[in-house]
Image 1 (tube, rainbow, N blue to C red):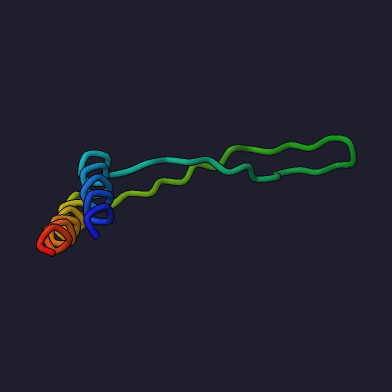
Image 2 (tube, helix red, strand yellow):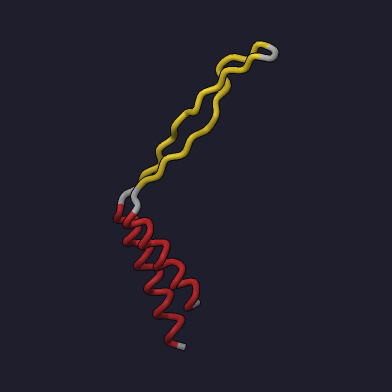
Length: 69
């Protein structure tokens, strides 16, 4: 339980510091036999830093419960 708490604490810290990330997917626009035209379509994923704080809180409770035994 202690290691799960530490992992949750670290994930929560990263989520609090980095509140968004971007990734790209390829989208086929035109396909004419040997000619293929594609474009990179951007996607944005973002969340509130409060979610990271909540995950850190859950990790702290899990770490505390694991160290009590």
